[in-house]
Length: 368
Image (cartoon, rainbow, N blue to C red; front, side, top):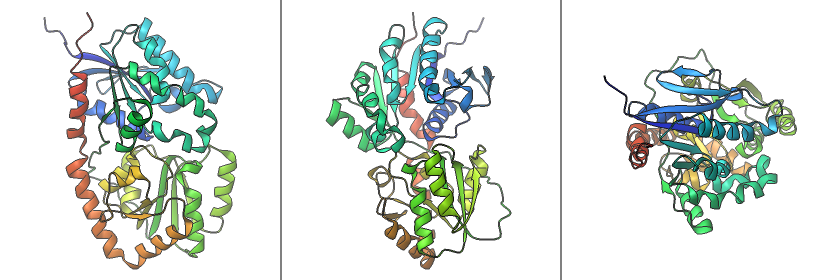
């Protein structure tokens, strides 16, 4: 009788697949590239997936019902996942995503070895919606030391974790999967494209709109993402958008459709104030987008000035100047995009990057 001897890994923190957020995309690609070597179980919540509990494409999914009180949805999801793993699960390892779930580590370690991947722990307090919970994030960071291994997705975060808390994290960058066949779009007019899973102030959409208004931009702007995250910010965006030709196309769940919009845009603008290592930016480069982005350290760790056009983070005038420059020097933008694409193929292929996680996962033996 042939038995399956693959190690069993439970994944907590992605909240749901297919991915529409950066951290979930990271986890999704790790699983996709390693699912022949490990048996994965993904803990999810119905607010973030259309799946129900079951097996999809060789990966088990356990899906909890979302909480009516949205503010507690993630916290309750974390707790239910941990308790299910402890009392009903039988795994060899837990892969926990996000430092704000670090409080689960002592609980999970009653039964399991734990590997944690952080996604921007160093800048959560820079995101407006999380500033009031800074204490909640800060007290959890030292708990990361209790995990067997900690990985992070940016060089900036690795340094911050060590300098601030002496957490020795392993840097494994995010990757991309080159999409060879993209959908054609019935768009006859050039357009600028902006995309974010959750459109909140830290993503900088208001700066882009103000920059385009200052340029008296008459072209088309497409905005993809969930605008219903913050009602007051939403109203600011809608008011600014009245002065431009803007189409809000919502959150695009079909990745190929989203990448098609990006690939066919004249310019892809990414004005974020804070990131870990932006999956959106990597994916934009992977489809040859002409990119203008903020000069935050996490972006500059990945791309140099020969690959993307940087503007000073939060500086509307500089953003406007760079947009105008991109229009006036479009051949230069095309050359930059070609170099950025080659960077992705060489340095950020998930097939190669997932080997880093493979080495870590293989360090732990099966449960006895």
